[in-house]
Image (cartoon, rainbow, N blue to C red; front, side, top):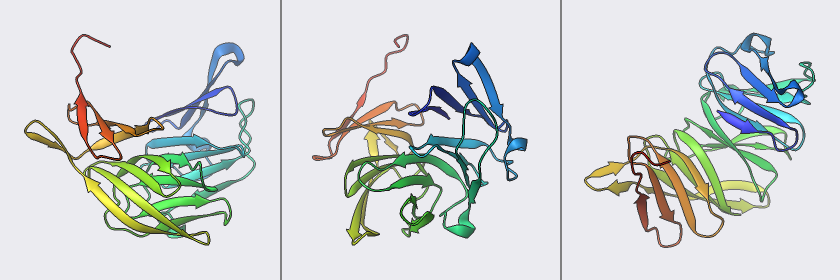
Length: 231
């Protein structure tokens, strides 16, 4: 995974077994946070990285849960505290693939293998999971309104999730599942999803189907043609 830090001039790079690399313009160099340097034992690949406005570095792994490194800095490796979240203290699953800072609520949505939809609540300073058996293998999340998320999953297609907020108590009101047909093939596995801010999702599929373009209002979609030899 790759992340451009929004608050400092850093690019974070998650590796498959070699910890986290940090690239910044100070002498145009790479620095490493090795798995062995992390405050807890991490043996699984790193699949998601996120930095928030409070100088927390969030590290999601495929099997070892997630770490929140507090007050990280590009200039030194000292870390001022950490939290390790697993399925034993709120996380729906120990495989974590994506983070999304909500534009509407004081929380971070977390994509996991599920079942259920996890999030970190800044208000309660804890991980909370909303139970739902349909929400599994979430690799990417986008937020299109205060009460609607779209999830890209590895096997369950794309999911429209309607969130209900009753006095800051969140629950899942509905989940709508969409498989996309491309010719004779039905595509169920998606690993990335972005929203154009108006009405269209662009969804990256796995299996050679390319990018799907999906209208969130009409639910119409098509696949963008990818010609060989073109970038």
